[in-house]
Image (cartoon, rainbow, N blue to C red):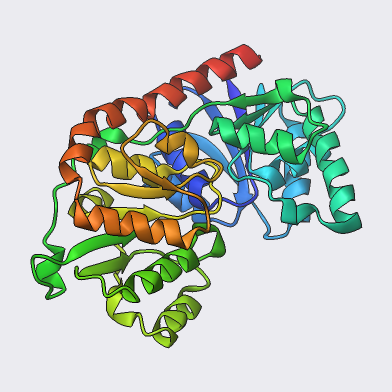
Length: 368
């Protein structure tokens, strides 16, 4: 089976998808051609994702260059499936599709659509254009059911039969293997200090401002328990957020930690993980935390509520700092590590990457 993978923005969840899914041994016999900007993604595929036999076509950083490479490659080759990853990739690939091509075009939506993206006249035109282009795709694969609902809600003219949710997964064996490390000794903290982990990017999407507000609420109540928020995130607003922390007099509660390649151990070392996101395509961190047996507080946003449903996790409304503060206090007062540890095996079964891999293989075989 010959497959073209078109990737305009090979970052974040797309890299994880390639590593988990296409890096699996069951895809070794597939013939992959990959179009993506630059060579950094190529190095990731070779060194981290375990890709061996594939053709990598590097394009420029501009969308126009990506579009031309996709059109040129489809015109010169007979692919069974064109699989675009991300909204931009899907639009660019479909627009550049030669009329004579008989390839099936699948797009995986690795993000969600926001109402703020469709304001005013430009927003109306954008909605019309996306609806038209997406309806020409053979299939739109989403990684959660609520992500499919999000597209149908924002683009009411979309053909819902084209929306195909496959609940995503993780390498659960990897996150089951974590062994706690003594972070308290490393940070010179006493044994009673409650450790809370924040692993999201420092962007508005991940709700770090909600977490700051929640901590501010807690400190005003003379809360008699010691806790630290250990942040492992990255992103464009890290300086701004930590400046805001200092200005609000909250710096004693936050510690920016160095990057770690051992997420299972870090997660296992936490007493609690907080994930106050405003939206997600699929909350992989929540899957990882639950599989590691670590308590988590998450929001009911698109893409995360699917993961937290029917789990021991406390769920808050996105942006609700009062509820987040109450949930954090509740977990500190009455820790539930044992309850979450008991849930590990069920989480490992529910979130195993094996299931989505089997469903994607089936999807490919049924598409040709």
